[in-house]
Image 1: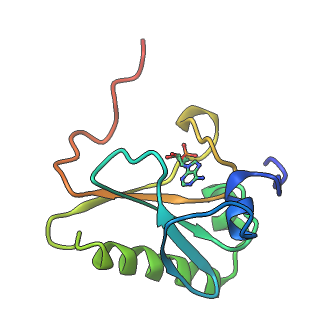
Image 2: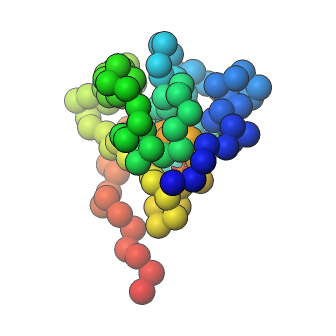
Length: 123
Ligand code: AMP
């Protein structure tokens, strides 16, 4: 497991060094719009704790953080009006997923038909 890099862009957002378009915030969680949206609605949900990826979060986060995170994902999706039309929740972990930002986050995408789950891998 990589050690947490506190210079990653989401750490800077959490410290208020970089602006973000906040959708929801509480003690444990921040949700904000993705800067390069891949769907009409594309929101990122991140824990405020320093976790590199889903693997790190699932292993080390406390029960209260995990519960708050899952609740926040559902809350944000409802707040964005996606409950009835549907949405996708996705987390990238590590090299094969092309995780770009080494602070755990999930993507909530919706607002259109999202197509197949995965692009065809290169052979
Ligand atoms: P991932 O590939 O799962 O690590 O996704 C990282 C996501 O962070 C990408 O969808 C980027 O568009 C998004 N992103 C990068 N920088 C920012 C930023 N400053 N504000 C909002 N979203 C960002």
